[in-house]
Length: 303
Image (cartoon, rainbow, N blue to C red; front, side, top):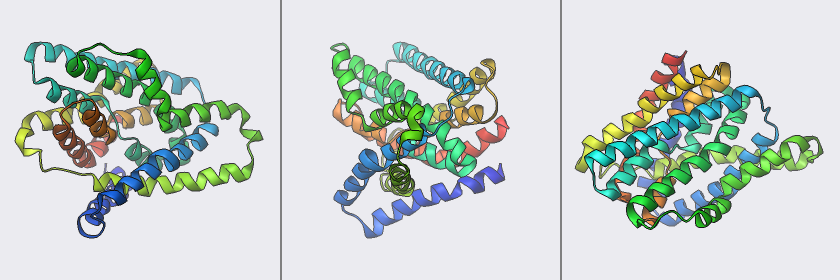
């Protein structure tokens, strides 16, 4: 556990640095919005394309993704069933739902890189290619169903997915995988440089976006749902990964995926679709802080 903690500590140190820089030096929202856009639309897609282009696909990865998809859907179904009986305020529930099923891609890649190197990052890129579609789709579905209450427009959802740079980068990377020997070394190196820049800048942006001001208002449900995301989902995922016969690095990456804190863009989706964005920001920040402790614990138990 101590080795894992020491390995991932620099990741969270960069996040803390982002918070310090935002508070004391770069207070302008414009600076951080531009940084986030550069990361989201340029640097991170380059990392995904390059990683997937050179990735080695094999059966264990396919089984791992199937296990993670089922684990996520099981947790989603449990939450919807509980909401049927408990009947929380609908915007509040949608934020709890997103907080349980969405994951932070930036921290996922950062931690995997620190623990497992390039081989880990390659598997992470494959997992992201599938899970980003699933988690976005079910989040939009729940927000539509509980807030808009007008049914889910499949065509609109498909258009939004097609505009997502991470999804498009994943598709391009998969398509280039069998053609990687024909890709010019200069282009591959260019994308490699961009991808390397994505990790520190993305983690700084994560830190700049930390917001714990609103945790105390509803700390009970927020802490509970944070632990569901950071402990319960990894347990469900571990059981399914084991049942599917997944071993080695794909299994570790699968559990690591499930142990990730909530994604920062869940806040944007909550804002755009009428969810409880204040609670969403609090859940994102709480899961990030708690994951400093829970990720080493989860990985130690798996080992």
